[in-house]
Length: 321
Image (cartoon, rainbow, N blue to C red; front, top):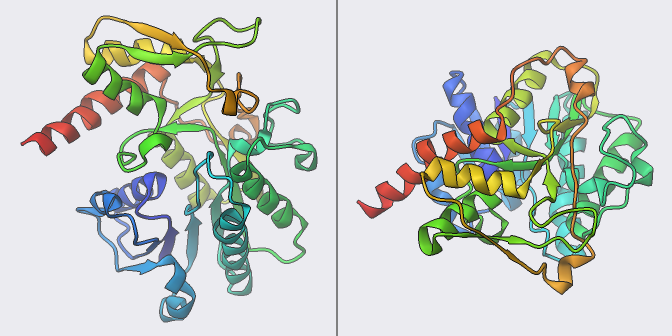
């Protein structure tokens, strides 16, 4: 039986969908039950039980767990309450780790590329994580757990902390402002006929030339399933494409997928986030590739085309009908 935390969320619900497609339905799902907008993410999914995250430890002994995907976390990068992050991202993750260690259960958990901060020390998952300095409390909560995990003498029989880069794809409809730029660009085009992007406030980057490693959630799922099956050396693994692309590239791809003329407006980056804004991220993917992972990755244009035409547009057509 597989336990999946964050199962009603973006990546978690995609993971449940993928496991179901693999014929795996013996699942224990865990999530918070407060946000009704997430209910749609589990419609049609097959699983044994759904448990509130705060009640997990009272009920977990009732189930025979043999693998854990710990995907649940507070992911709001604009949240600044360290107490919330300490509870949900750090201490809760420690309890998951200790449970897996004590019961000899393999563990895959969600770290984040936010741990790399402004990229001063690069984006290499084989580097010294102690020198990294995230730009917000969310990033620090992930960084602090990665460091704690690295220092543990006792550990699960296999564990992998996955540093997700800029993930986009279906089942993010509930995320509001934290949804992907692709999702927001689609809505801006529908409502206004144009996309607003932040201006560059650095002379070495053109407006819209800021770079991110945008990775389609379907590629993330393939990486997760590969690690689940093969269980190579335990440690941290980047999950991205290995190719940074500009926000202008992204916007143009959304216009193309929607068959609309390109119209981009550049606006000032808000002062309160300007000093925390990342101008470049790009995952170094050598470590994962050295485990034997060689599955082709969606290009940005391919991923956006699939997401817009096969998910976003049908989703809103279904709502309208």
